[in-house]
Image 1: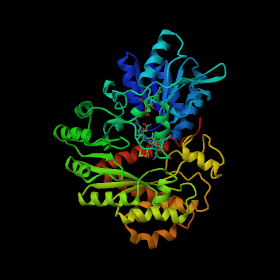
Image 2 (image 1 turned 180 degrees about the vertical axis):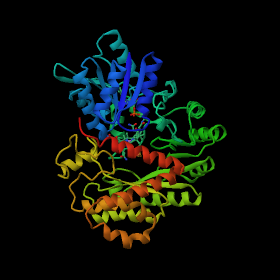
Image 3 (image 1 turned 90 degrees about the vertical axis):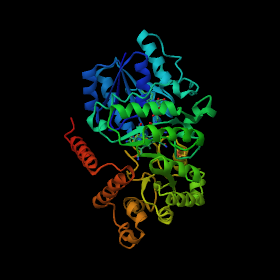
Image 4 (image 1 turned 60 degrees about the vertical axis):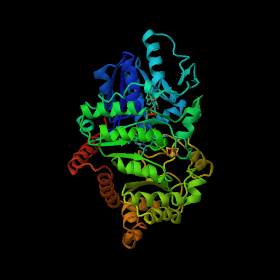
Length: 475
Ligand code: B12
Ligand code: SF4
């Protein structure tokens, strides 16, 4: 069978690379195309004539996917259209939307191969676990299969489909996943909801063996440009023994600077291990400066003391770090938002980023915001296309907090700028503030990845061309 995966974002998706690898190992043909709008999605379908079109997506991409899927279905009703990834996994009801035939909930590696086999043989997929679809007007949601316990059985991610694009191939930063799952249950994250789907949820956190990860790293390094390794795992440092085994071999066999996510509260030994094995940047979530709201409302389970201690250790070991923060959380006041800024200033943050809270459908924090009257409804248009979009929740301080988000980087890094920048937050949000934000966004990107200015110019031109090409007349 011929599968075509479509997406609107210029980035390798591990969901696609994993299910694509599984399909190819089972003898199917797989293609992936970046098609930023429905017209281009349709044109890829016309050229490649697939039997099945797959979309892997987050809540933010839902509008794009629904639009593209409906357009394809109207022209080519014989094509089976599949939805999978973070957002569909929690929303089987998407199977009722125009254009979508089947939704995959949770891990897709085995489910998609099972489905492809049924489609090829022309037999029913009614009992294929993890799938949801509509039969006689009723949504059927099949139970999920147990999570794969031995990740090493999976083939290496299929990257070649993406690296036909020069822009992605030439990126000196290459992305890797060494595990699946996260043991924590933060209220604003999809992990706890996803964990609940699995019958063997105790096995939610799993690691690929160091040998498997090194095989992936080596294969990428030998075939494509790679100067910086970015481990995308939710928390890279969960298992100390495994980490030590991986990093010992990593320094010997790869030896490139790497970036990873950790959690505040990480111990000094682990920080020392990271610092001595070429780690360039660690990222960790502060989320909000108000400890009570962080651990009550957000259920993050990280104290201010842990944040202060972690930052002190990172400074001591000269390890560059980057904090992630969320502004405009439910009931957030201007003073609460300032607390987040203050905590970043207190730890002398060398690099930071800050999102505006987006109420993703089906997550506990979103449900709470709706119940408390902060969000009138959850629908296709209630989340922004990214986390820098304007806030969706009703909040009397909304505009000022949104402006604070634009100035967050310089204010966190250079508190002396407060006397100039804080008064500006009282103005109406405007383009100038956005451009200033963009300057610091680029600066921060360069700082934590270390990519060359040349590459940054290439990326700037790429995004600019993209921007211009999507501004054309509507057809
Ligand atoms: C890498 C990453 C990105 C990358 C790539 C995104 C992608 N779709 O792969 C980039 C940088 C583009 C990105 C952007 C954003 N991201 Co992001 N990202 C991640 C991250 C860390 C890893 C995703 C991943 O590769 N996982 C590993 C793969 C193997 O798992 P998977 O994708 O779930 O795939 C499996 C199944 O879902 C299924 N499957 C997947 N696709 C398909 C397709 C078909 C057809 C089938 C049958 C099955 C199937 O099979 C796969 C293998 O088992 C996740 C967190 C996480 N741990 O997953 C957040 C996450 C996906 N991101 C999230 C968010 C919010 C964002 C941003 C809004 C952040 C921002 N700053 O703006 C943007 C959204 C941009 C946009 N407009 O869509 C949220 C999504 C929440 C939601 N409810 O939708 C997540 C879940 C983080 C979280 N903590 O909640 N992100
Ligand atoms: S620690 Fe990070 S990845 Fe894990 S549940 Fe919390 S926010 Fe999600």
